[in-house]
Length: 70
Image (cartoon, rainbow, N blue to C red):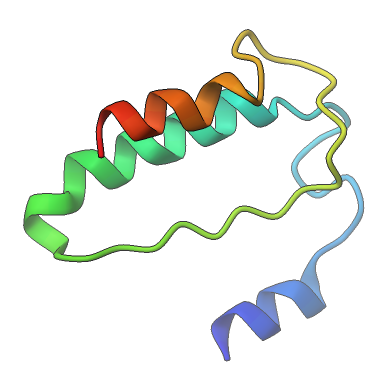
């Protein structure tokens, strides 16, 4: 239900004009990994239009980094 509400409220440009997919994924994985011991199992849902227009980490590098931390 929460995801449905958030999707209905989403707007184009909500997070800004530029998208750093690799950076966002890496940050999300880091936060999930840091909270893993306290929160139990967690799921990361990542929605994007697929246009990587900013950031320092290439989008395909982020899953490799995530795999290294489990």
